[in-house]
Length: 549
Ligand SMILES: [Zn+2]
Image (cartoon, rainbow, N blue to C red; front, side, top):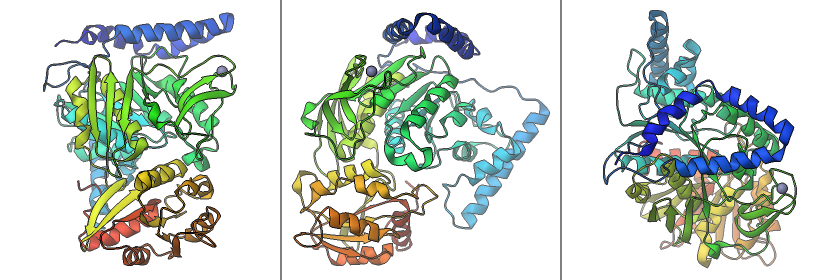
């Protein structure tokens, strides 16, 4: 099936190049004269444009999606530029070889940094050679998982997605990823089905957009997790607004309608949008979610009213002041069954398709990741059958990894901030099943977690009585112990046997010894303690190296 977008797209691309700045300026001057009416009419225009564009999943069954192709192609480079690029690739590959020989893993941003020091435009040049263009995924939580889910959908559509390594989500990390594929002359091998799927740190989006021109930008959510790095969320959102001015005018914004911080993002831009959201009111939480910090209205800063809250500040909202409301999502989960600790089933309605998604990952937060991926697949016009390929996704190495250690069932889960910790614990203990836990808390992981005060916002209270034994680890284990005492897990009347052992390996052994043989051991931890434990398990052959799978 030929998609109408192909014909229309050339026009859009031709209009967009170099015209973004001009058009935004035009819009700003118009806005000054006539105020909010323009904003409304532009939003209407955007809706009309989106409806007119083919957001319907296209292409025949099993065939590669033909619906998007915005690659800028190989640009002819002069001999000096070509020489520098080849040198940059050589430098990057040499750095990677050295790191590997030193046994430091392959996920480092160092090769990219070495290469970019030689040729600052290397990332831009390599990204422009990805035949089908690039999707960027950003937000506080779920970036990596959303990328892997989208990649599975793309593979099922006959495409060859290139993914960056989780956490390598700044320009140097992206450069490292592309370097690994580049030839010695500094080019990506020709591959008509190649497509970039890159997670990008929300603080680095502007820098990345200076080098990579995506055809879609996916936003998962904005939580407090990065507050220590980005000061405050309003500042981050304003910064995102600014950097979105760099987005190509034809790029589709894929936005979480349930997150008011995101739903109004780029409201002045005429880019097409795909909104996604949860419609199954069975997941409505009564009362105010313990982890949520409810945002103000993104348009008038008035108070938001929620008719439903699903998770943190995600839900169905509207503004009492100006009437701004949650956008009607085009991609929506009409039913979400959170089957157990390991999986969920989503009934998703998207333009021109309905699908049941078997998501092999737990919890509402992964249901949202699957919806974000389905929204991105819609923006990419993948064949409708592609959505169900989400069942091929693995949890990644550090998200929720199941391993067997001497016949014992062990789950390793990364939780790096308040909402992540709360949701992982809810997934583990959901349905009232008791769980034997090891909880890790560090403050030394690459300066990402210097402030651990967020543990006071984790909803430990509602899980009281569900944990017979908890071993606390990491260099801030004692902070966790105090937190659990206040949550009345331990102390007089507490039902949990709580032990503190800062060393992750000793803590793990202790947790195993305190867990009945027929019960799994759940390890929920911030980055560093989990990595130390995982490295110990790897040396004993229980798990592979990071990123081997
Ligand atoms: Zn308002």
